[in-house]
Length: 509
Image (cartoon, rainbow, N blue to C red; front, side, top):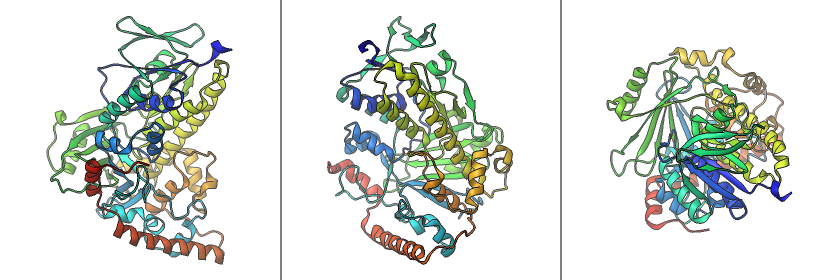
């Protein structure tokens, strides 16, 4: 029985996916399982996005990382959600928020039915205080609050390249991860279909009980060696190109936005992310609806300066995912498993969720690996499909008619049956926890509410609210007004707090 234990893991590929996976698994198993990470010194970081989810706070804490050092080393700023501009009508004053803080007392009461009957104000502003503080460029906490603690829920904006270096150093120095530099020359596959080794171009062969493919879009192990089918989702999500660049702030006093700014364009959208030392921006678009030259011109106009091809990073987006994510003794994490446009920053959270599963369900014996793999595949198929639905929702609800891109996105033939079913349901009842079957949904019901009602979707009045429900809902919304007033008075400017964190640090927990 001892010979059947998982004694060694080989993570192939570095980057954010590889080192996050290494850190998450090693934080629990690093003393008992040999964890090697093999990466090439010549593979660049893709770096699309640069945004995380709030889950990253828990991930970093579990790895024993100081949040202060993380901020200082990775050019980190606070992310409190996303502001979507010009997605509904295309007009200049058209915007809504998807904040990271849940509606007031969301797990106890659904405020949407009351809001639908009684308010004409912004949904997110009526049920959460986060839109108000974002509009004033305020931070989610004060310097007196300890690391990972805040008044408002938050995630991070960061430099993906610096994150990789930071995690690499931490994993090697604190978590017993062995770092191997080498370029994969061949993936060895046994007659039974398992990976039996990974050979590098210097002739070395590395063996493990479990192989984790973090080789990015090339998917050298799961995709190429084990020939796992790729499920194309480009018939639903049309975005397949991205051009990105880094922009300096105009002055030392320029605001650092505490949210991701997403501005819709004729055939896609532009992200704008504020880090402590610069902005990270990019234009994602559909090459079926716009030429590369048109996309570059639109991006140049947005930035207010002419751009050349040499000024940008050009990225192709293969929209889809593997049919299986764990096959035999190999599991793919990150872009090796699949990739979708960076709307709603789902890439890194999928790495966290997958690595958490491997950490928590690491087979005690190789004999049960097929069972663990089957469950992992079922869960991840659901997750990827739900992400596709949620991203598509942003396009389906748009009322823009200024380009074929927006019209094609509303064509029922391009909308998954699962999303059409939910939209039909939500015509008569607002989304809530009972609409979702998994305990850890990637996007909770609150996220659907923020997007639906932010984009003008209306749910018809169903059963009348009881007097008790109306009273309870009204009380929560009045409490939210009071919280907004207090937060606007007590929370600091985002740039000012980030500067103080760099100089003084946060209080340790």
